[in-house]
Length: 85
Image 1 (cartoon, rainbow, N blue to C red):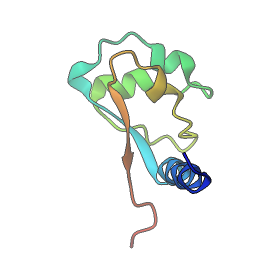
Image 2 (tube, rainbow, N blue to C red; image 1 turned 30 degrees about the vertical axis):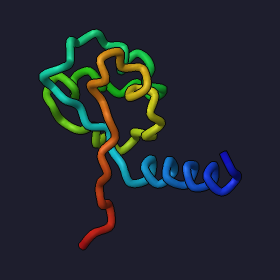
Image 3 (cartoon, helix red, strand yellow; image 1 turned 45 degrees about the vertical axis):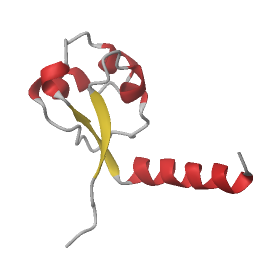
């Protein structure tokens, strides 16, 4: 892997974190609560997953801990356009 590849991958990751939100697939969630347990700011991600609603909390850091820790892969990042008219 070259330095250029590494920088491009890092830029893509940062763009996703800034313009993304955590979106669940409600039908696959088994309500284990691991996503909520690992959220550093205590957002009830499990409730969002159960209801099938994206996590649109104003305090969400989009750190990706809930996405990474979900054992069933229920959560994923979805790109949103925050500044569209």
